[in-house]
Length: 68
Image 1: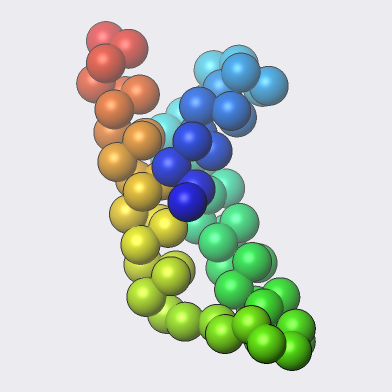
Image 2 (image 1 turned 90 degrees about the horizontal axis):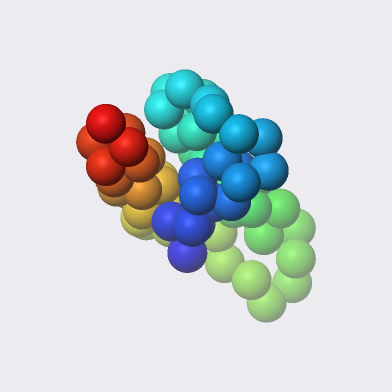
């Protein structure tokens, strides 16, 4: 779900370190899942955090190695 986020961050802010891109993606998914705890009918799950972070990680790796 968050795999496009690093690409959008690069479009908005320009060149960012891969670690910063991953950290922003990870914190975004933590924020989303934490918010879902308080919404009736929504379920927060650790697997969502892992899968969203993996998607961001794959995108960051693509950006890092494709750009060089």
